[in-house]
Image (tube, rainbow, N blue to C red; front, side, top):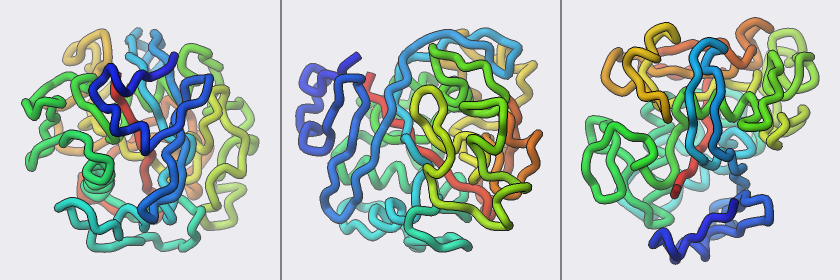
Length: 282
């Protein structure tokens, strides 16, 4: 499935992206920002948390977690009104390491600034309510265009391999050491992205490495079906804590399973928490 930027009204994005025959996008290195790849996740149905059937619309997700190199480049870019004070908050420095010690608020600020750079609409207001492309508040994640954090359902759908659904315990394998840096093999520190095997979609490190923030507020899987639509579920209205998924370099095997969930305040920062970009124009 190929994205027609012109018909979507975003012809200017052709100078920012290349598109391959599989539909994946590559951001072209420019303005001091390095190239990075976005993997197409085509629409389909799956069992959220292994319990509740949901349907997800197509979206793009970053092949790698946001690296310190990418985070620093966007933070230091002079364009736009959004300021990111600390260009590299990470405790374990390395340009190809995942950025960590970023709060949910930090991750959202990064997304907002990147959208400013590529001249895309605001994704949320000052209260972090979602905004549609015409600037109106919305409860539908598919109304939000540009770079953002994944919903919890999108994250899990991608980790499972989307419509290819690998049905593995970890993202890409039932053998954790094949796909994840975790407590027993990371030697006490995060590693550069992309050193383990990817999942079936070609996405790396969705198990282990660093936890990845999602947009949702935290709620139990047993309640998602009660408050969310069948298609593109997201919890926006209840709770204060924000969800993160995937496990980390200092997490045990159980916490690196695809279905495992955790959460923290939107201000929380730790040396095992980072994020991964999602991009949508559908």
